Length: 127
Image (cartoon, rainbow, N blue to C red; front, side, top):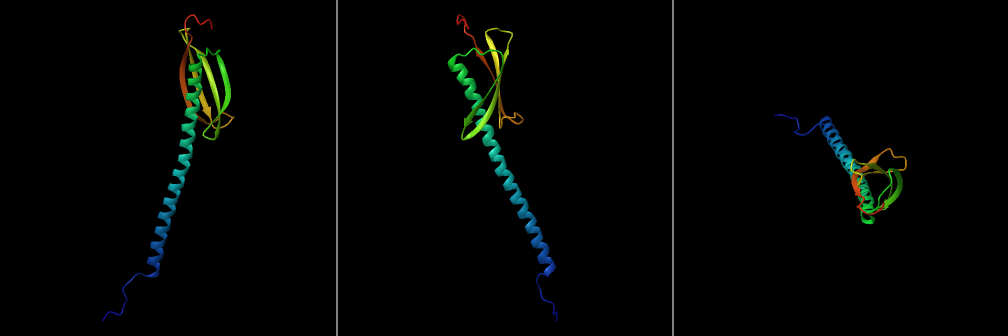
């Protein structure tokens, strides 16, 4: 007769619990990082809209921008953004290249969006 009981020892149960705890902590960490990524993606999407809006406004108003750098702020989706717009001459004098960068803050250290486009000076506009 075998008088030993069948089942798990206390050490085996503790090891299994430790493994489950580690797996759950890893899953929780991955979920937390996913949440942070969603916020970053939302900010980048809204910053891209800010850049597109700036270029669209220039085109709609038929602006002929002076060469150089302009700075400003915009609010999109409840968030505040700083933007920097650089107007650059092109070999064709009827066109100017406009590069827009949008930042999370005024310090311009973390660029969320970058968009380049062209504006046209129509012939006979006198601008």
